[in-house]
Length: 114
Length: 113
Image 1 (cartoon, each protein chain N blue to C red):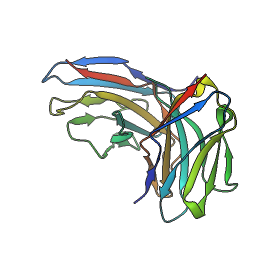
Image 2: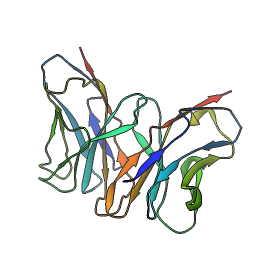
Image 3: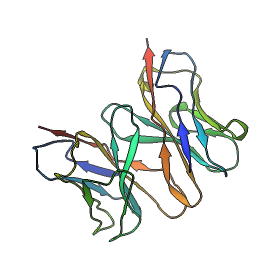
Image 4: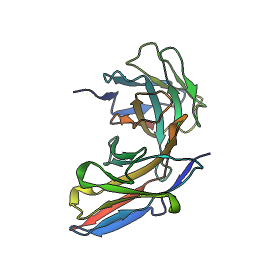
């Protein structure tokens, strides 16, 4: 079955360390997205990409970086510049284009600073 | 700019009772509207969506939603709630030319036996 795979499910980061969250999809979707979820704050957009080798900042991009070298993959790096990285991170994909098709979400990665 | 409000942070219902979760949006033209459900520790799953046409939309898991332009609302309903429906529910609004939807802050549904 097609879907989105996020790994790892749980991730622990030490102070000053960069960590990378994986997101892979086999839905042949053009667009991919990263969201951060904190209790009571809903979903906040970090980065998104409509096509390979192109991506745009979302509302809270500071301290994060992404790449889109393959259509199937959209990894997110949480850098040491992100001062409060503890959160639940969700990756999503959609058919893209100029109409907001519904998203397919991965099962998330919970990142904790230790 | 588009925005969406879910007025209720928590809703508690008894198993077997009916359910209505509220969603109000702000957007000038015809919006694209979505409802998603999230079980604890999981990603979101699309329940239903409205783009155009019939204003009463049927979704998965027995849910439906009604688009009411005059009230700028897209409330989610279910006639009889099951304990497995306990989850977080998110409303989202998008628009033609803006394919990034805006999500509400969510409503937590608690189901009592």
